[in-house]
Image 1 (cartoon, rainbow over the protein chains, first blue to last red):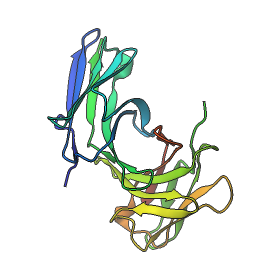
Image 2: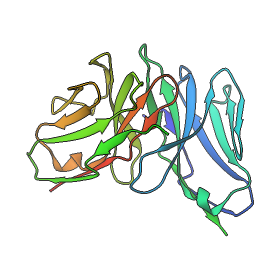
Image 3: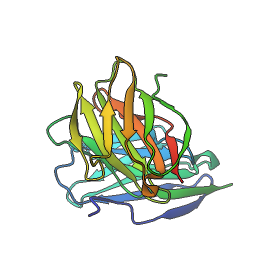
Image 4: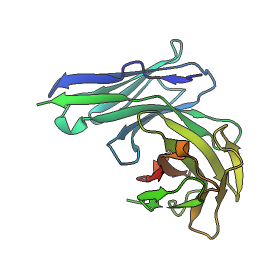
Length: 114
Length: 111
C-alpha cells in the first residue's frame, strides 16, 4: 500500500532549465510534507518542506507546491544545475499521536545535463 | 551544523549473528528514528523512540529488532539473529519538531 507515490523513477533536464518533480499521496491525515535529496551511500538530506495549511513554500531555487484537493505536491528547481543530480524523495509526516514518522515515496532520479 | 552520526559505515556479518548499529542523534533532539533502505527500494520506517520508549513501530520491526538509548547520547538498533534479507542501508534520524535530520547510514551486508 503506497501512501506516497512518485510515479516517475527518473527525470532528465538540461542545465538552466526547470526541473519539476511530482508526488502524490493518499492519506488526507498527512500534515507535513518534505523533500529530501539523496546521493549514493549517503543519508537523505533535507531540502524543503511545507505544512498542509499552506500551498507554496519557496527557498532559493527550490519551491514546493501543495494541492490538497488533488493530494499532489511538486518540487520545482529553477534553474537546474548539474550538482542537483541526485535521487529526490518526497516524504509525508504520519502524525499518529506522537511526533510522527515519515512515509517516503520511492524516489525520482534527477539528472541535470550540462 | 549539527549532524546525526552513525557507526560503523559498513558492517558485514554472517547470517544468524547479532549486530548493533550505533547512532548519536543531535543533542537537543527528543525524537529518534530508524529507517532502512533495501537496495533499489524506498526508505522504510522501522521504529520511533521518545522519552526512553518506543512510540511507534512498523511491521518490519519484529522481535528480532530492538532499540536502546543506553546513555544520554547513543541510540542503538540491535538485530538479534540476522537474515540475508536484513541486508540494507540503515538510517538513523532525529528531530526536535519538524526538521528530521538523517545520518549517513550504515550499510549492513549479511552473508
